Length: 281
Image (cartoon, rainbow, N blue to C red; front, top):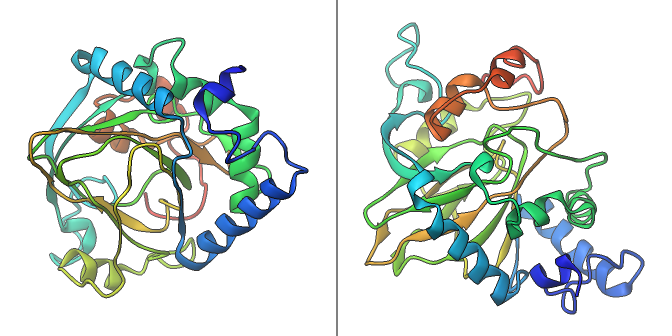
């Protein structure tokens, strides 16, 4: 078996056979969902054995996880006292969670092999209908594990990259539900008013996803605000997050990187002022 066959159920999802009818049907289905609600879910995409290897990798490296218990706004920016108090950039919520950063993954990690796979890049590009698409260059956030223990909560936020894949590795006993407000902003409109409404509890635009281990979610996290509800019960939630971008040069802003991954590296400062999509974060 090739490495990819050890990770993805290629019988059900032949992403290596781009001329096959099965591939074309899968792409069309996911494309329709992404266009309709900014998100799609492909069940049992990752093989059970690979999910077990990812779980073991995450647990072997829990001592390297960067844990955060801090307040942040949806943009991971500092407080700006020049703005009104009810501006969403001034609405801070406590986040408690951790990341096993991409630079701490094991060399033979299934997650690394998946993210570096040209077949996976081509598949995601076809699903999103984005050409060219690139693997994210951010050395910390390109494909981390998000680790949430019981009691942890990840509040509403936007991603620093356009597109994120989520692969659930271990499900919480209760809670840990992914919630999102699709296409809440665009590169031409920050839509602060409706962002504030969701932050204040408006459920009208909010959708929920209860993922199972092995499920693949493709998501437009740059434009759709999202959160993970509080983890309940006795089991932690592990999720792998390979990320993709339109611009191969872009990385997280230094402040975002420090708040989420615990540090900023030279590349974050070198590329800090690159204008990408006009959004404030």
